[in-house]
Length: 270
Ligand code: PLP
Image 1 (cartoon, rainbow, N blue to C red):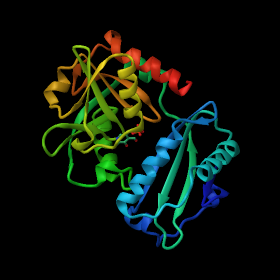
Image 2: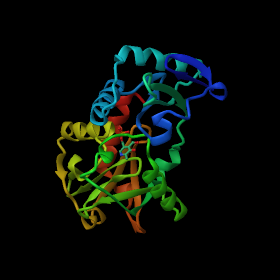
Image 3: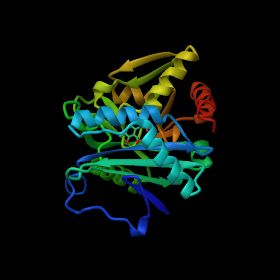
C-alpha cells in the first residue's frame, strides 16, 4: 500500500516520520476521515473546512488550498486502486515543516451491520464541554479508543459518552440521533461533541423531509425512551441502533430513519 507524505508517494513499509515530531510525541495534530464512493471523495470541502477551523483552534498553521490536497488524495486513491472505502488525512506538527499524510483504507462495515443494527452502551468516561478536545478531531484519540475497547469487550459495537452535566453527548466515533413522536433529536455542539459532517447532512435531510429537528440537551432516559435511534459518521453513514445497554429497539419499525438513510444514500451516490 502507498501513502502520501508531504506530497511524496511512498510505500507504507518504506515510510518514516520523525520520532521527535510533536505530532508523534504529544498527539499535536488533527485528522479527517473521508468516505470514497465510486472513486470520488464525499464532502471533501466540508472536511477541509473543519480541518482548517480546528487548526486555528489549536494554533497549528495550515497553508494548503483544497485543490492541492484533492490532487494528492486522488493520486493515492489511484495508486492504491481504491474506489470504495476511505481516505484519511493526518496533519500534525513537526518543527517547521508539518506532516500532511494521506492514507487509504477499506471500510469494515458490512451489509449485515445495517440489517441487524448496532448494539451500543454508555461509557463511564464523560465528555467535558469546557475542554477543547471534543470539538476537534485530534490525533490523540486515546479516550475514545479505551472507551470503545471496553464496550467491545462487553459485546457492544459502539459506546455513548454522556457529558459532565449528565446529558447525552456522542459516540466514540460517531454522533447520535433519536426519534420520538416523529421529531428528530440530536445533542447540540455545546454538549461537547465533534461537529460531524454526516450530522450536518442528516439535519439538512430531515428538514427537507419536513421532519421537525430538535437540537439541544437530552438525558439518558429520553434516549432510552426513543422510538428510533441511529448513529452517524463519514464512513459508516447512518447506522440504526437495535440495542442500548440491553434495551431493545425494533429497527424494522424505523420509518423516519429509513427515509433519512435512503436520502443520504442518494446524496453520496452509494
Ligand atoms: N464524533 C466523533 C468522536 C468521531 O470520531 C466522529 C467521526 O469519526 C464523529 C463524531 C462523526 O463525524 P463525521 O460525520 O464528520 O465523520
